[in-house]
Each structure stands twice: as C-alpha cells, then as structure tokens.
Length: 251
Ligand SMILES: Nc1ncnc2c1ncn2[C@@H]1O[C@H](COP(=O)(O)OP(=O)(O)OP(=O)(O)O)[C@@H](O)[C@H]1O
Image (tube, rainbow, N blue to C red; front, side, top):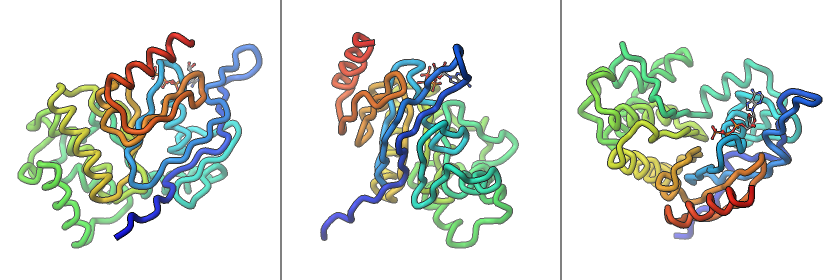
C-alpha cells in the first residue's frame, strides 16, 4: 500500500507579530511561512527571545498576527471572533505544558475527560473506549482512579498528553513538556509522543530548548530573530546542538 499523501495540519503565511509601537516596537515574528504536515512531530527550537512562544500563541489563536494568515486544517483563524476561536481551541487543539497543569481534585480519568466536560458533554461509549485505549497505550491504564499527587512526574505528564489528545484534536502543542522530568521519563514521554503521531496520525508541535528532546522529532524548525533560520529533518542531538551553536555565533 502506498503512503497517504500528507496533508497540512497548520499553515502560517507571511506571519509577522509586532509588539508595541514606535520606538518601543519589537518584531517578534518577521514574515514567517511555515507548514506543519499532518501526522508529524515537529520541533521548534531557537535562542531565548527568538519568537518560539509567540509563534505557538499565534498558531493557537491565543495571540493575533499583526500581518499574514494562519490556518488550522481548513480553517483560516485570522479573522475568527473570540467565541469561534475558543471553540476551535477546545475542539481542534490540545496543549501539553511543562507544569502538567492537572486538576488535583480529579482522578486520572476525570482529568483526561475534562475537555469533554468543558465542551458541555460527556464522552460517548466509543470515545470512552478510545480514551481507555490511549491510557493503556501510554502505560497508565491501571492508574485511572488515582489523583495526580499519587503519580510520578512522568506519569502525570502522560495524563496531560492523554488529556491533550482525548478529543482527537487536529494539532497538539507541547511547550517544553519534559522540562520537569528526569532523562529516563523524558525519553519515554517523547518516544510516546512520536509513536502517537505514527499510530494515530496525530500532529504534534514541540517547542523546546533541548536538543535531546528535539531529536525525537521528524523535523526541526529553528527560529532566530523571528524568522525561520533553518529547517531540517530528523537529526541527532549533536547535529542539533551544532546548528544552535552556529545560530548563536551568527547572532
Ligand atoms: N507581550 C509582549 N510584549 C512585548 N514584547 C514581547 C511580548 N511577548 C514577547 N515579546 C518579545 O518578543 C520576542 C519574542 O519572544 P518569545 O517569548 O516569543 O521568545 P521565545 O523564543 O519563546 O523565548 P524563550 O525561549 O526565552 O521562551 C522577544 O524579544 C520578547 O521580548
């Protein structure tokens, strides 16, 4: 069987973001063109202040572009109003953060089904079956009734990943998801994220400073001064560190 043609999960076209105005204006993004292929794990790297968070926020509709266009799947989000953006974020995007952000009073299952609650409904039988499959796949199936404080850091981050993917969003943003984990848990969590993109054709954008984390990605996009400075395929931590060094030297 031939591979399905990759489609685009998100696209930025000529996206600029300027904070402030006049003498205090900061150009955080400068005419960025970027396509994220569906079913891929893409890492975004770059020096501090290069525009990574701004890019993620603009892609997620949390911040608006000053110029240019952003599409998520088929939807141009550039001119959506706040209500439509909130709905799009809830149904089409997932987020995983360094700090896990789990609700301490809810069980694992309660945390993972929270996106449905926020959407004003309960998961149906098929959705619950998928969630249980996902928990099993992430190796936390037997922890369903535990509270977050009864879990290790790596287990908590798996719950956060399950929650981000529970509604099968078009795109998941993971912002330094392994920042609070030891190297073994980091490796496992990143390996699982990559497996999820392969097995379920989930699209993940990983923002990270860590070349080891980024080495799990299919593609690594380097941002420097608000522009795409390099765009490479899967690479080793050493190759990625060398690129970071060369960008820092050029800066
Ligand atoms: N709300 C804001 N108001 C003004 N300037 C901002 C704002 N947010 C970000 N900036 C500026 O925009 C630029 C890009 O910032 P951004 O946070 O996107 O960088 P980053 O690559 O995510 O950095 P880090 O790796 O340190 O998190 C920086 O110069 C920053 O100072």
